Length: 187
Image (cartoon, rainbow, N blue to C red; front, side, top):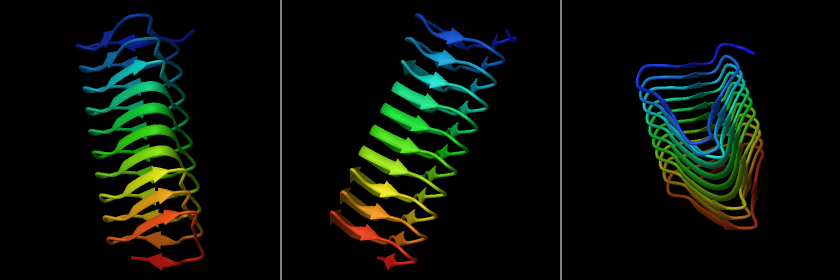
């Protein structure tokens, strides 16, 4: 069964469930049909609503806002002033932090990082140690994977695929059906 804990000024409302050894603490708010289970933590001033599931060893903390059909699992972390809204999965040691805004149908997994002031929308995937940071903007059906990086003020639109340690940065704008790979450097 476990010993789930809700403490301090935390609130669990509506039909939300906290089970296993999960912790909801600080001024965190969990509402809607959210499930927080296993050893997951929702702390500080984080707000989780909709039909989100927070499980495994994952953490949602800081002033993070999570809303919709969001799954945060394994050892994933969502923190700081991040906002996630839509059908989003953050898993397998992934990190979403800073002031990132992530909307749409997004997958962040396998040690991928989305951080800083990044804006993500559409059907985007971040896999295999991908890193997106700075003030990058990514929209459409993009896929960033295999140690690739998108950073600074770079913008990706459409069906862009960045992989194999490639970098897109500076004020680069990439759009359409494009593949960037193999240690390429676009700026």
